[in-house]
Image (cartoon, rainbow, N blue to C red):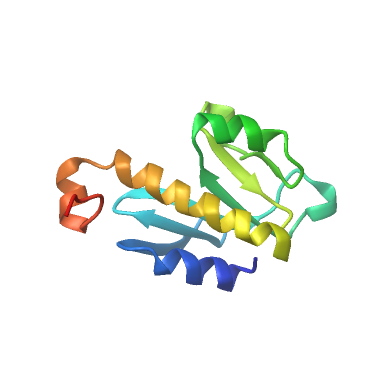
Length: 127
């Protein structure tokens, strides 16, 4: 997945905002909360300076992805006990997986917003 594809996908999700910060990282938020980050891969010499994508996961997915090739606990976040994963080995095969995990991150983060903010943003409302 390229940064353009990443940004297009994240921008297609309801009530998201984009900001570039932290050394040109592509940061996507729902309200004030981050759900995805596109930045350069770190700590993997063969993929250094290649696009890498960071997202929040469930406990189960964190444990699973931490041991899977192309994924690792996200630098900074995971070292502080947060369940965030970095996907650093993007290919056509793994782009579909990445899209799934980005949607899951969006869902997890949106459910963590206050009920008032969820309502204001039109998120998670029973119809």
